[in-house]
Image (cartoon, rainbow, N blue to C red; front, side, top):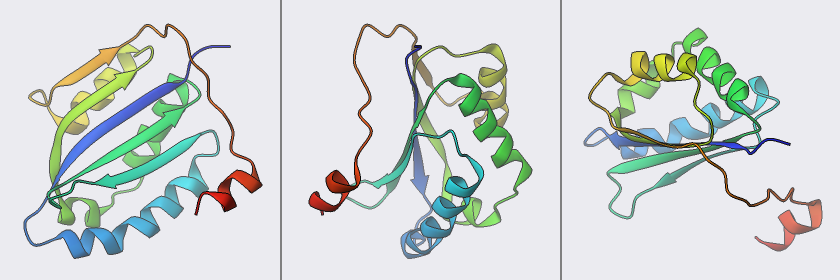
Length: 137
């Protein structure tokens, strides 16, 4: 079994748009969940000072991430650009294909740093059970 493909992107929130971003996220998450059945995990985290968000995605492989990029390209989400100024950093854990790199460069531009750690040395992904999910809240 191949290692998971993990994608983390940091985005700057437009000044004065944090409340709008918080309202946007639930619908965005629902859309991603409904349209990407292979995606293992999709989370958005807010910085302590409220100026940045990070998307953390865990895919079973790079093909799943490529599908994610196509889903985003097919849906012009104006609210995303209304609340987020842009991507400031990307980190990828896993094998990056030339197609995915090209898609990312088109999406974020040439100046956003993309760090890739391609070699998985070990680890595991544990699937949460219903009991795990209810006991952690």
